[in-house]
Image 1 (cartoon, rainbow, N blue to C red):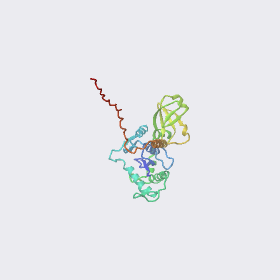
Image 2 (cartoon, rainbow, N blue to C red; image 1 turned 120 degrees about the vertical axis):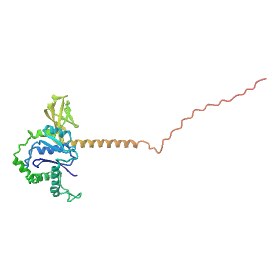
Image 3 (cartoon, rainbow, N blue to C red; image 1 turned 180 degrees about the horizontal axis):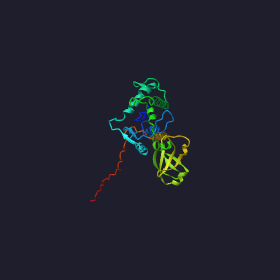
Image 4 (cartoon, rainbow, N blue to C red; image 1 turned 30 degrees about the horizontal axis):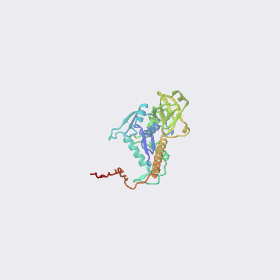
Length: 306
């Protein structure tokens, strides 16, 4: 499988501020995870660039035109700008970054394709590829002078004494970026969501009330419950307490269950068919019964006496 790469770069610094490498098709969630890394402080002290951007330039891919990304931009006060269709203005910097990664980093990794075939056996896991891209971004790309600015992105960031705009906490950022919102009604036994039951003692006072459920698709073992935009509680799925179960896990289980049901129905139909007579040709219709024959009366002759 070929992985996808979503990157975020600072237009002024030419610095890579965040990225996300994944195997699934591009989605609003993967874009949000790249933004999460771009905005929040990095664990690596050498990767200092962070902050909420004033504007975000994107193309017209489905992951960039989703309602979720529109809401994220509104919540974080980011001006979302889509490039004109068939006019890739403003996307050249990203394309050049991809070109640099393709020509400088990927040829050094096992499994790199040459003329459509791997030059060496592919041995990298997704996590190893992620680390390789991160090391290249932090240790090479952000440290060397950029041809467009003449300065290294990291040096430009340090010299500018930038004061980044940041959320109050990483949890607040996750609440806006990663977690999706869905309406639900609180039942007596808790909240039913994605086929799971979520419970919390706090929900007892909200039975029958409409609430908003916020969830992380990467971990559905718990949800956050809001009532009229006010945080109420965290509700736990007792069935999956202490383990991470993703939305994809649940969807895959549903698909497997549907396939099993279809297979079971097919087997039952086949068993029933075995008990039915096999027809060798068109059905023969019985001739209608003939009406009962009526006895024919005979003429009797009598001689008359003279």
